Image (cartoon, rainbow, N blue to C red; front, side, top):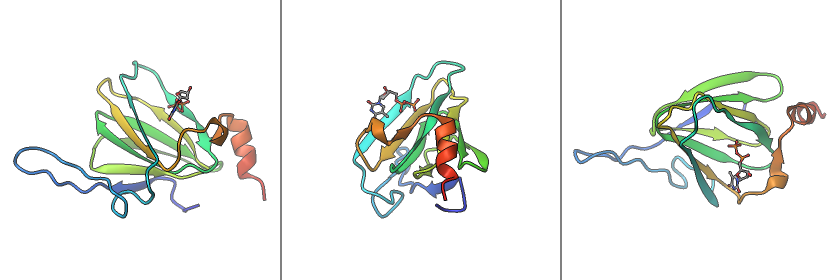
Length: 136
Ligand code: TYD
């Protein structure tokens, strides 16, 4: 795992006088082939999401509207980052506990993933996750 919990990538901007256009493509902002895209929107006030880690999954999260705060935890250190720009993507690899807080009412959070949905890839217990990070 990288030393840095928060791995931000620049999303190339190709907008012009007509408006914005941002590109996430393989070899550019995307370091993996995408097999699934989902997006969170209309999150109700005060709702936090996530509270899990993945065993294998790699994800790129882009807040294309509004803002959201991510908390990442590797079993030892915890860091926060606010996503509020479609020009930045947050890479989250396996072995990181993630929580999402402070969704703005207009937040649209796009998530690009390198695998289809698989509940068996989730670790939904923080205790189990912490134990997994302390295995030699
Ligand atoms: P979940 O990943 O638990 O949401 P979050 O971590 O953002 O709080 O997903 C919520 C529900 O949606 C859960 O029942 C699984 C389902 N789901 C899918 O069916 N496919 C998907 O790609 C995702 C992300 C979730």
